[in-house]
Length: 328
Image 1 (cartoon, rainbow, N blue to C red):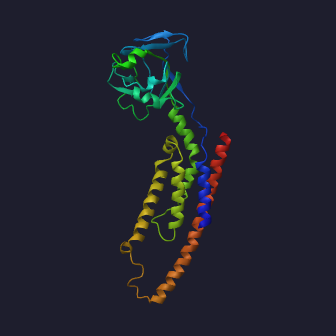
Image 2 (cartoon, rainbow, N blue to C red; image 1 turned 135 degrees about the vertical axis):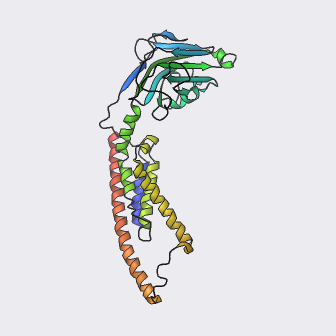
Image 3 (spheres, one colour; image 1 turned 90 degrees about the horizontal axis):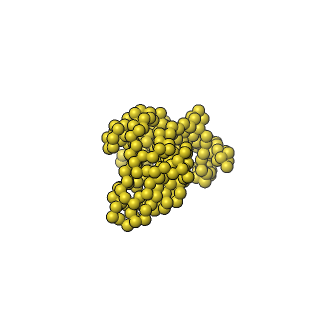
């Protein structure tokens, strides 16, 4: 058992020390520009110098309440899952303004109806790379699970506003922000496809639990070791990679963990354990001999199960190592 645990720990160390990457097979990145910002709208003015796409960006000085609306939009974004755009700021403090602001998409031709929106307070967390900076920032928002009110096949209105600025200390600083390259992509689909390749070793760990029925004395140690290894490997994955694991596989892991807890609870409370020999008419000597024989048989079965689990874990660790090495 000690050797098995050592192998499991080695596998977990390999997994936890690596950032796992893989390329998506069969899923090509797609994008659709829904606002190229080559035409000014609302309070925006064109800036042909600072831009990331096309002929210009749309620029605005935040020294008053600015509501920028664009109704001349018509796009079917139902085949995409992510909104992305570039935002230039004169000061990264812009991302922490205590103001009301929102980037909004609707299919109603007006604000606040059939909408999907992100508030200004969510902008900093959406910056690619994680750190807002002076200059251009690329923002990424997934709308896959949050666009229930928006008819994604009939987008026709965009609004970007920041209000409640007048009369505050921030109004005097005259922050400048510029918008460009507003597009939708299938980034989430691509990430999930790539993650599905990455998590195969973790799924193998989960399936190696080998639980068929209840946890018993015969399989307790091997099931627990495999479940702990699988849970530790699962925790090392990022959110997208965790989402790529099939629900049936994850259910196998949680079912095993519940069965282990139920067995351990039964051990702590002997009264809840079903009698194994009571009323059989066997003598104490016969019972003892039977129990010793059962323990020997159980030990052999446990050793076999442990060996299988160890082999799967080692193979999984090697696969993960090769994936990481390939990335490097």
